[in-house]
Image (tube, rainbow, N blue to C red):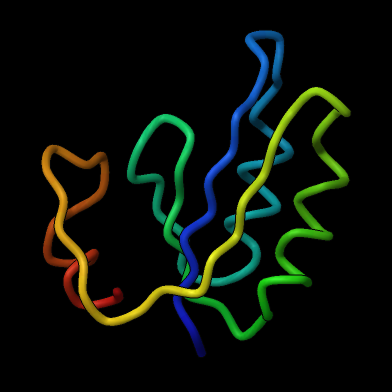
Length: 87
């Protein structure tokens, strides 16, 4: 399993329900910022991008990056311990 940072730039009309269902089905996923999730998954970055891409329109952006082992944050939306344990 690997940890990925998934960032997206979504338009205001975006309906997050299907996007959140899809990202949650990929493994242990936590929203950390309004447009960012950390996902622990057996899928690779291309698979994650392709599955999430189905829920985005042409004006929206998506970035999937495999995480390294070091990170720093402030006031994220998920639990600090989970993030520290999974980066």
